[in-house]
Structures are given as structure tokens and as C-alpha cells.
Image 1: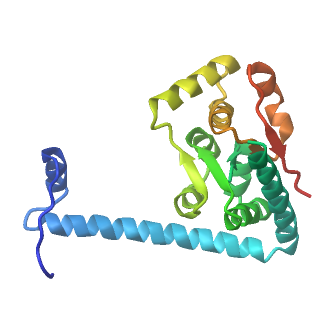
Image 2: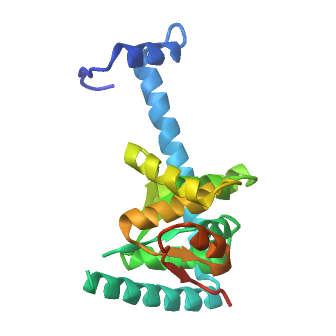
Image 3: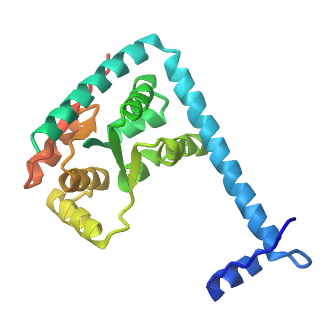
Amino acid sequence: MGEKTTIQTSTETRNRLAALTPKGSTLENTIRQLIDQNESRRAHQRTLLDNRFAAARRDPEAVSWATQQAERLARLAQERDGTR
Amino acid sequence: MSGYVLDDTLITAFAHGDAHVTHLIASLDARKLRMAAPANVLVVSQAGLSDEQCETLNAVVAHVEHVMLDDLSDLDHITALAHALGWLGSPHDVAAAHAAAVAKRLDWPVLTLDAARWQLVSEKLPWKVPLVELREP
């Protein structure tokens, strides 16, 4: 680990973090684990979404329908913006 | 540019893997059209879904740039939802009430796959809920 710095938290946050930290470990280890878990979840979500979008793109009927509807909705939104 | 409020028919269709709705959300995002996803619509749509389906739905809100979660973090928004719920009466239809309240506040239409789902709601609310119905082939 590189250079050290200081972050300020409320006492409550510090205590919650400490409660998650096993004996012999450090608060920094806990923070890093929580960051890793969050990044991992976001990456999993991103994969689920990319797979879903890719599957939809392989359906020509869905692409055609959705493109037409999106163009219509964009026109309607522009008209609404124009009258405001 | 203004946008659209996503209702439970649309979000449920996405959650169940509907390719038309999935590509529609991607197409609207590509055109920078904003989409509001009311928290209570997400709650109702996620009921009974698998963890994977829920996570895919959460991923849309977390990762699609022009989809915005309307999460009721503002007290006035909670009150507006409560008023809408009051007008709709019992049994409570929180998904419709939240979508209608967001549509009123943002002055955006509700995007739905089934206008009939909104008929009773529109009759009970004292304001007009603008709807845009999308009919899948």
C-alpha cells in the first residue's frame, strides 16, 4: 500500500466499520473489501445489462419496432418542448 | 428535453426479458430522452421476481444514463404520492399513484403498454394523466 492519508467520518460510521472488522485486521482492509464488493456488484449488473441489450439487438423485429417507437417518442417530446 | 415516466406494464415487461421493451429503453437512452422510474413502480414490478431478474432491473436504473430513479427522498414528493393514493382509494395502487404523481410534477407523460390499465386511475384522479401507449406487435 502506498502513501497514507486521513479521512474524517462520524463516530457512528467509524464504529460500524469497526464492527465489520475482524480481530487482527484493519479498518482499511474492511474499507477495501467493501469497495471490492461494490465494484463486483456493479460489474455483475453491467454484464447482465449488456447481455440483455445484446440479446435484444439480435431480434430484428424488436429493433425495428423499438426504433420506430423511439423516433415517435422523440418527436412527441420535441413538440412538447416547443409548446412550453 | 422532456421525458417519460415508465409505468409498471413497461417495467414488468423489461423485467421478464421482453426484447421490444429492452431495445426501446436502449433507443430512448441513445436519443438522450429521459425516463423516470418511480421507486414504487420498481417495488411492484420486482415482487415475485428472481434475484437475477431484480438485479437486471436494478442495473437499468444504476447504469442507463437517462433512466432516473424517483426515490421519494423529498418530503413534498411523499406528500404528493400520498394525495394521489388518497384519490385512488382502496385497495391502494402505489405503482399507479407514484407514476401519476411523478408525471404531474415533471409534466411528462406516462409511457405504458396498456392504456386500459390507466382507465380507472384516470377516472379517479382530479387531474389528467397524459398517457402514451405503445402497442407491441
